[in-house]
Amino acid sequence: MSRSRVGGSNALPDHKSYKSAVVLIPRGWRKLESNLGNDTVNTFQLLDWIHKVRSVHDRHIHRWPMPHITILYPFVHPQENAQVYGETMEKLRNACRSYRMTGDELTVSLGSGEDALGYFLHSSKSATVYLRPEGSSWLGDLMRHILMSDPKLRPYDEQIREGVRLPKEDSGDGDEALCGAIERHFKPHLSLGQWQGRVAAVNAIPDLAKSFPGPMEWETKELCILHRNGFKDPFQVVETIPINGPS
Image (cartoon, rainbow, N blue to C red; front, side, top):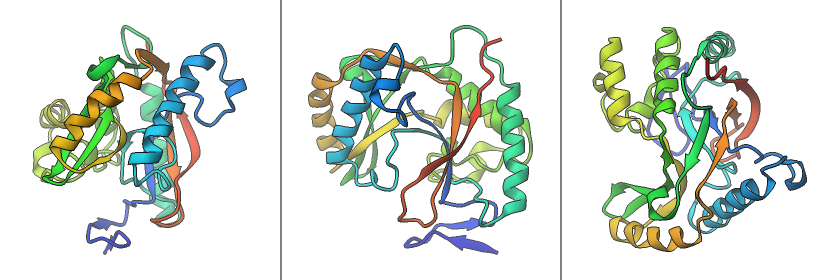
Protein backbone atom coordinates (compact mmCIF):
# COMPACT_ATOMS: atom_id res chain seq x y z
CA MET A 1 0.00 0.00 0.00
CA SER A 2 1.23 3.54 -0.69
CA ARG A 3 0.10 7.01 0.25
CA SER A 4 0.02 10.19 -1.78
CA ARG A 5 0.94 13.63 -0.56
CA VAL A 6 -2.08 15.78 0.07
CA GLY A 7 -2.60 17.93 -2.98
CA GLY A 8 0.00 16.06 -5.02
CA SER A 9 0.64 12.84 -6.86
CA ASN A 10 3.90 11.64 -5.26
CA ALA A 11 3.06 8.22 -3.84
CA LEU A 12 5.04 7.10 -0.80
CA PRO A 13 5.48 3.71 0.86
CA ASP A 14 4.12 3.33 4.37
CA HIS A 15 7.47 3.98 6.03
CA LYS A 16 7.81 7.48 4.54
CA SER A 17 5.86 10.66 5.16
CA TYR A 18 6.00 14.26 3.95
CA LYS A 19 5.04 15.19 7.52
CA SER A 20 8.43 14.23 8.95
CA ALA A 21 11.99 15.40 8.24
CA VAL A 22 15.54 15.32 9.62
CA VAL A 23 17.39 18.63 9.30
CA LEU A 24 20.17 20.86 10.60
CA ILE A 25 19.02 24.19 12.07
CA PRO A 26 21.26 27.17 12.88
CA ARG A 27 22.15 27.34 16.54
CA GLY A 28 19.95 29.76 18.43
CA TRP A 29 16.91 29.69 16.15
CA ARG A 30 14.64 28.47 18.96
CA LYS A 31 16.13 30.72 21.65
CA LEU A 32 15.62 34.34 22.55
CA GLU A 33 18.33 36.70 21.40
CA SER A 34 19.48 37.30 24.99
CA ASN A 35 20.15 33.58 25.45
CA LEU A 36 22.28 32.91 22.39
CA GLY A 37 25.59 33.01 24.26
CA ASN A 38 28.85 34.63 23.22
CA ASP A 39 28.01 34.64 19.51
CA THR A 40 24.73 36.51 20.02
CA VAL A 41 25.45 39.29 17.52
CA ASN A 42 26.60 37.12 14.62
CA THR A 43 23.88 34.53 15.16
CA PHE A 44 21.16 37.14 15.44
CA GLN A 45 22.39 38.92 12.30
CA LEU A 46 22.38 35.67 10.33
CA LEU A 47 18.94 34.56 11.50
CA ASP A 48 17.46 38.02 11.08
CA TRP A 49 18.82 38.30 7.52
CA ILE A 50 17.56 34.84 6.56
CA HIS A 51 14.11 35.55 7.99
CA LYS A 52 13.79 38.87 6.17
CA VAL A 53 14.70 37.31 2.83
CA ARG A 54 12.48 34.26 3.33
CA SER A 55 9.55 36.42 4.46
CA VAL A 56 9.56 38.08 1.05
CA HIS A 57 10.62 35.26 -1.26
CA ASP A 58 9.87 31.87 0.32
CA ARG A 59 6.29 30.70 -0.14
CA HIS A 60 7.07 27.71 2.10
CA ILE A 61 8.08 29.74 5.17
CA HIS A 62 4.79 29.09 6.98
CA ARG A 63 5.15 25.33 6.61
CA TRP A 64 8.92 25.39 7.20
CA PRO A 65 9.30 28.29 9.67
CA MET A 66 12.85 27.33 10.65
CA PRO A 67 15.89 27.96 8.43
CA HIS A 68 17.30 24.52 7.73
CA ILE A 69 19.57 22.22 5.76
CA THR A 70 17.67 19.06 4.86
CA ILE A 71 19.30 15.71 5.55
CA LEU A 72 16.43 13.16 5.32
CA TYR A 73 13.04 14.00 3.79
CA PRO A 74 10.52 12.49 3.53
CA PHE A 75 11.01 10.55 6.77
CA VAL A 76 8.89 8.23 8.90
CA HIS A 77 6.09 9.68 11.08
CA PRO A 78 4.97 8.04 14.36
CA GLN A 79 1.25 8.59 13.73
CA GLU A 80 1.46 6.77 10.42
CA ASN A 81 3.77 3.90 11.35
CA ALA A 82 4.65 3.83 15.05
CA GLN A 83 6.60 0.57 14.96
CA VAL A 84 8.78 1.56 12.02
CA TYR A 85 9.26 5.03 13.52
CA GLY A 86 10.57 3.60 16.78
CA GLU A 87 12.93 1.21 15.02
CA THR A 88 14.18 3.79 12.54
CA MET A 89 14.75 6.47 15.18
CA GLU A 90 16.83 4.06 17.22
CA LYS A 91 18.94 3.29 14.14
CA LEU A 92 19.36 7.03 13.49
CA ARG A 93 20.42 7.68 17.08
CA ASN A 94 22.96 4.86 16.81
CA ALA A 95 24.30 6.28 13.54
CA CYS A 96 24.76 9.74 15.03
CA ARG A 97 26.33 8.25 18.16
CA SER A 98 28.88 6.31 16.15
CA TYR A 99 29.73 9.10 13.70
CA ARG A 100 33.36 10.23 13.91
CA MET A 101 34.92 13.10 12.06
CA THR A 102 38.60 13.86 11.90
CA GLY A 103 39.81 17.42 11.61
CA ASP A 104 37.78 20.54 12.27
CA GLU A 105 34.80 20.89 14.52
CA LEU A 106 31.33 20.19 13.22
CA THR A 107 30.56 23.62 11.84
CA VAL A 108 28.55 25.01 8.97
CA SER A 109 30.59 27.83 7.44
CA LEU A 110 29.13 30.51 5.19
CA GLY A 111 31.36 32.72 3.08
CA SER A 112 30.83 36.29 2.01
CA GLY A 113 29.51 37.99 -1.07
CA GLU A 114 28.21 36.03 -4.03
CA ASP A 115 30.32 32.99 -3.12
CA ALA A 116 27.90 32.30 -0.26
CA LEU A 117 24.94 31.97 -2.62
CA GLY A 118 23.78 29.64 -5.36
CA TYR A 119 20.62 28.54 -7.12
CA PHE A 120 18.80 25.46 -8.39
CA LEU A 121 16.81 25.69 -11.61
CA HIS A 122 13.56 23.69 -11.42
CA SER A 123 12.08 24.82 -14.72
CA SER A 124 12.26 27.75 -17.09
CA LYS A 125 10.01 29.69 -14.72
CA SER A 126 11.13 28.42 -11.31
CA ALA A 127 14.39 28.59 -9.37
CA THR A 128 15.45 28.35 -5.72
CA VAL A 129 18.17 30.63 -4.38
CA TYR A 130 20.06 29.28 -1.38
CA LEU A 131 22.97 29.77 1.02
CA ARG A 132 25.82 27.42 0.15
CA PRO A 133 27.96 26.10 3.03
CA GLU A 134 31.70 26.25 2.50
CA GLY A 135 33.80 23.12 3.02
CA SER A 136 30.66 21.03 3.49
CA SER A 137 32.31 17.69 2.72
CA TRP A 138 31.67 16.54 6.29
CA LEU A 139 27.94 16.84 5.62
CA GLY A 140 28.37 14.36 2.80
CA ASP A 141 30.35 12.12 5.16
CA LEU A 142 27.52 12.33 7.69
CA MET A 143 24.93 11.49 5.03
CA ARG A 144 27.05 8.56 3.87
CA HIS A 145 27.48 7.30 7.43
CA ILE A 146 23.75 7.52 8.17
CA LEU A 147 22.59 5.76 5.00
CA MET A 148 25.26 3.06 5.20
CA SER A 149 24.94 2.41 8.92
CA ASP A 150 21.82 0.23 8.72
CA PRO A 151 19.51 -1.23 6.05
CA LYS A 152 16.53 0.48 7.70
CA LEU A 153 18.05 3.91 6.98
CA ARG A 154 19.22 3.19 3.44
CA PRO A 155 15.81 3.83 1.78
CA TYR A 156 15.73 7.48 2.95
CA ASP A 157 17.96 8.60 0.09
CA GLU A 158 15.78 11.24 -1.57
CA GLN A 159 18.24 14.06 -0.85
CA ILE A 160 20.98 12.34 -2.85
CA ARG A 161 18.54 11.83 -5.71
CA GLU A 162 17.74 15.54 -5.93
CA GLY A 163 14.36 15.20 -4.28
CA VAL A 164 13.48 12.02 -6.26
CA ARG A 165 14.11 13.75 -9.62
CA LEU A 166 16.76 11.07 -10.24
CA PRO A 167 15.76 7.41 -10.52
CA LYS A 168 16.29 5.07 -7.59
CA GLU A 169 18.89 3.18 -9.62
CA ASP A 170 21.14 6.24 -9.64
CA SER A 171 22.03 5.76 -5.97
CA GLY A 172 22.65 2.04 -6.51
CA ASP A 173 22.49 -0.83 -4.08
CA GLY A 174 26.18 -1.13 -3.25
CA ASP A 175 28.23 1.06 -0.96
CA GLU A 176 30.44 2.26 -3.81
CA ALA A 177 27.45 3.36 -5.88
CA LEU A 178 25.93 5.11 -2.88
CA CYS A 179 29.16 7.02 -2.17
CA GLY A 180 29.33 8.07 -5.81
CA ALA A 181 25.74 9.29 -5.79
CA ILE A 182 26.34 11.35 -2.63
CA GLU A 183 29.43 12.95 -4.14
CA ARG A 184 27.64 13.80 -7.38
CA HIS A 185 24.21 14.81 -6.20
CA PHE A 186 24.07 15.73 -2.50
CA LYS A 187 24.25 19.52 -2.37
CA PRO A 188 23.72 20.76 1.21
CA HIS A 189 21.95 24.10 1.11
CA LEU A 190 19.75 26.47 3.10
CA SER A 191 16.90 27.65 0.88
CA LEU A 192 16.07 31.36 0.85
CA GLY A 193 13.12 31.35 -1.53
CA GLN A 194 11.82 30.99 -5.04
CA TRP A 195 12.48 33.18 -8.07
CA GLN A 196 10.94 33.10 -11.56
CA GLY A 197 13.60 31.24 -13.51
CA ARG A 198 17.33 31.45 -14.18
CA VAL A 199 17.59 35.15 -15.07
CA ALA A 200 15.68 36.23 -11.97
CA ALA A 201 17.81 34.02 -9.72
CA VAL A 202 21.09 35.17 -11.27
CA ASN A 203 20.05 38.81 -10.93
CA ALA A 204 18.94 38.31 -7.31
CA ILE A 205 22.26 36.91 -6.08
CA PRO A 206 24.34 40.14 -6.32
CA ASP A 207 21.64 42.10 -4.49
CA LEU A 208 21.39 39.49 -1.74
CA ALA A 209 25.17 39.31 -1.46
CA LYS A 210 25.39 43.03 -0.69
CA SER A 211 23.36 42.67 2.50
CA PHE A 212 24.43 39.18 3.58
CA PRO A 213 26.30 39.48 6.94
CA GLY A 214 28.97 36.88 6.12
CA PRO A 215 31.40 35.34 6.54
CA MET A 216 30.20 33.44 9.60
CA GLU A 217 29.66 29.93 10.89
CA TRP A 218 27.56 28.04 13.36
CA GLU A 219 28.50 25.01 15.39
CA THR A 220 26.48 21.91 14.60
CA LYS A 221 25.88 19.58 17.53
CA GLU A 222 22.61 17.88 16.67
CA LEU A 223 20.13 16.74 14.08
CA CYS A 224 16.60 18.07 14.51
CA ILE A 225 13.54 15.87 13.96
CA LEU A 226 10.58 17.78 12.51
CA HIS A 227 6.93 16.74 12.52
CA ARG A 228 3.69 18.33 11.40
CA ASN A 229 0.10 17.13 11.71
CA GLY A 230 -1.03 17.92 8.17
CA PHE A 231 0.72 18.82 4.93
CA LYS A 232 -0.29 22.49 5.25
CA ASP A 233 0.59 22.73 8.96
CA PRO A 234 3.93 24.18 10.13
CA PHE A 235 6.74 21.82 11.07
CA GLN A 236 7.86 21.75 14.70
CA VAL A 237 11.05 20.43 16.28
CA VAL A 238 9.99 17.39 18.33
CA GLU A 239 13.41 15.91 19.15
CA THR A 240 17.11 16.55 18.73
CA ILE A 241 19.79 13.88 18.28
CA PRO A 242 23.39 14.72 19.25
CA ILE A 243 26.05 14.21 16.58
CA ASN A 244 29.04 12.65 18.27
CA GLY A 245 31.52 14.68 16.28
CA PRO A 246 35.29 14.76 15.92
CA SER A 247 37.37 11.93 17.34
